Image 1 (cartoon, helix red, strand yellow):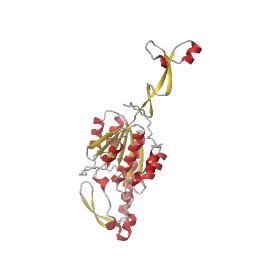
Image 2: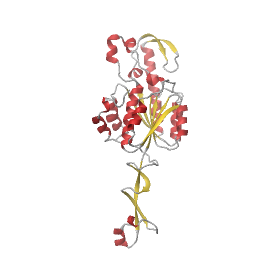
Image 3: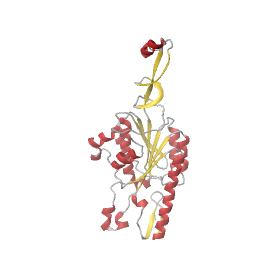
Length: 311
């Protein structure tokens, strides 16, 4: 995956530069950014007045008010702070899965049905876009990989987009199983500075998903889920006898995939997806589901804007 290839040309980057990440909450930043906070500082956005006290900078006195009221008031301004943006990227084995289309659908239809990006390549491109947008708006970006645990990470500030790209082009050699609870628990403990946490994953860990998201919620992060699946996971379209293999555990299962079994699979998957969405909505988290058949450029420039994740 090369997120800085022809798709990231100057025209596309210019479109990204017009956007910024929306945050419903204000977090204390470390450097001056373009995002307004509730802290009173020295930016040019007027906030309020207070009475003058000896030692205050005379340049902050509002002399117009003094001319009318003969009282000294100091003008207060809103400070501008960066938003801590955490991009948590699932690099587990299930994210790297690619269907063997010739086996599943036959040689004649394999080229028609094949998608150029697996889930991990898709989410890495989306993460690159989000990192670029955040960095252009002077936000601080921290990109973290995870599977069964929190893995490699990199932090970047203004001007360090090449560093973020280099990190996203390099993946751990081994792909582990997904354990959201272990990874998120480690993340919350190691990131005392709260901010906007964006999870990019297929969330194929029903045993730990809600508990992991609960840790982020309890940890006072603002949470946005970008749930990415492959079209074949949503609608397998398989019929006949197959040996199914779990991409993460390697366990196999002999199954006759008839219409009844496929329908049961779709219902069970739909119920699980609905449960994640409802859980996040009840806790005020953002949730958006997509699949890799949607061009990632459209997902970023259209879908994320429509869902008020970007503006």
